[in-house]
Length: 298
Image 1 (cartoon, rainbow, N blue to C red):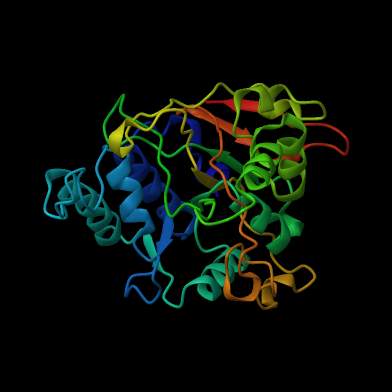
Image 2 (cartoon, helix red, strand yellow):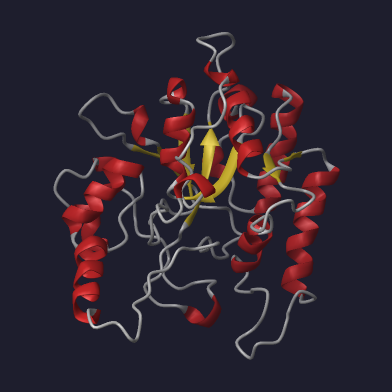
C-alpha cells in the first residue's frame, strides 16, 4: 500500500508525518492507515493509546500512583487519535482478535502497530503476501522524540515460596540471554533478539545484524534501563493480490494467537529490538531461501 500510494515509510519521523501519509494512502488506495477497537470491546483496546503515552514518557499513572489520564501527554495522545479518526484514517476493529485477523486478510489497513511477535502472526495469516511487508519502530510524538515503547507486555515471575527458584532463574537465563536461544526464538516466531549479543548470534539473518540498537530506557516510566522496544509498526508495502486461492476468506487460525484464548500461556515473552526511527527492515519472508533480507534505510 505504501508503494502504491507513493509514500516512503522510512520518512515518517513523527505521528504528524504518519497522519499526512495516511491521507495520501486513503486518497490513492482507499485503505485505512490503521485500525482500533473503537468501542473498546476487548480489555486491551487501549494499546494504541498506551503506545502514544509511552512515546512521551507517560502512562496511566505516575510513579507516585496518581492517575494521570488528564495529563498533557494523555490529551496529546487522544488528540492524535481523534485527528486520525476525523480524517477517516482509522478502521473499526470491534470484536478484537477476530476482527483484526479479518482486517489483515482483507487488506484494509496499511499499518499494524503491534509487538514484535506479531510478525509471526502475519506470516501464518497471509503467507501468500511474503515479501510485501516491512517493520520499523513507531514514529515519535515530536520530532527527535522517543521511539521506544513497551505495550501490554508479558512478564516472567518466580514464586517466592518455590523451592526451585534457582532452577527457574537458570531456565530464564538459558531462554532469554543465550544468543543461540534468541536466534531459535526468532526463527520460530519472528521475535527479534533481546540482548545485544543476540544480534551477532550464529545463524541470525543478517538484516537484523545490520540494525542499530534501539534507544534504551527513553520514554519509559522510571527510566527503565536495558529495555528495548517491544512495539513495532508492521507495514503493508504492497496491497493484497486480487483473486488468488481464497485464503482471504478463511477464518482466523485456531490456536495461534499468542496469549489468546485458544493458546493461553503460549505468548512469547521478552522485549525486542528493531530499526531506529527512519529505518525500515524488510521482514524475513522477503529474503530468498537461506538468506537474510537487508535493511532498507529510508
